[in-house]
Length: 120
Image (cartoon, helix red, strand yellow):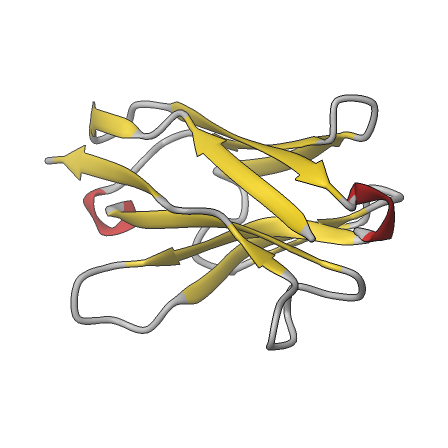
């Protein structure tokens, strides 16, 4: 099994930045894909960004050019640098991991979620 622990959420003004971190432990040798989902109140959970073990990345159109996902395999940690934040980025952000792709359900592991709130 894989355990994921997120950190770095909080409250920020529009235009500001936050950096989320997600540390993986357990059977991490099996993990190929990691990334972030988010869920705003009353909305479906959506894929924000994902990164493969070889650092190939994908982003949702809504965050392209503003968010950057990165991965430190030595530390088993994935990061999400969020710049130029907008109120519509407000959501609970969930770290996710999978042996194949986090774009396809079900996934091997989810984090507990961290709240990101962007004030206008």
